[in-house]
Each structure stands twice: as C-alpha cells, then as structure tokens.
Length: 34
Image: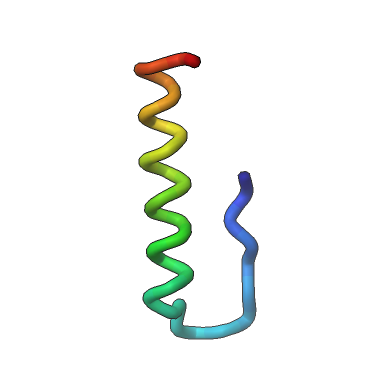
C-alpha cells in the first residue's frame, strides 16, 4: 500500500493511525505468515 499523497500540510491523527495500523499489520504478517 502506497501512502496516498495529499496537498495538506498537516496529516490528521486518524490518517497517521491508519498508516501505523497497516504498517504494524504488514510487519506482523512478515513474521507470522498465515
């Protein structure tokens, strides 16, 4: 998943949370393949 680039100068907490959740989910799957 490529992080969607926006023209906003500030990223909302929700957007950061979603990105962090995806990152952690991907890392988890790397170590725990289903």
